[in-house]
Image (cartoon, rainbow, N blue to C red; front, side, top):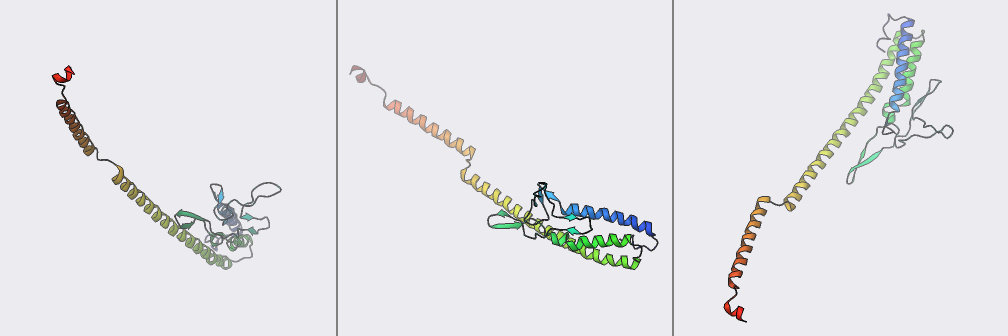
Length: 212
């Protein structure tokens, strides 16, 4: 957009820039339809998307229509996953925070103005403020995702520590001291042998036992 506002650009230059931005718009639509494990990331709780009853194909939540308009997801419900007992965590992003209809319409308006030779450079510069606003929205959503990731890491570290503590407690309660066990076993064997020896001497058969 900054390049387009350069007053030295002629009509052909602006049209070429418009083509580049037009391709970027298509790429943004593709990003809005991102799927992870075959589930849409920016479609609220409708992670699978509707199925066209005629074609049987899945309809993506974000579509760029032939007339220059856009169909966007309006499902803003949170996808919650239980990460620990009693703790449910939001794992998706609000599609209207990043890929709103206003965002795509503003991009399309920029492309249209670049293709219109009657639009002045000053009028093109007005798009910079609009794009800056959308950029700030994206950065805010990114910051929120980062904060959630930090919280997940804290929960993960806490669970790891709890697992280590539990294993240590089990080890302290159940594991045997090998050296102590061997020493006790040797002592018991010595006592057993001494007992057997003493008993044998006490119970030695006498001559009377043979004469009976």
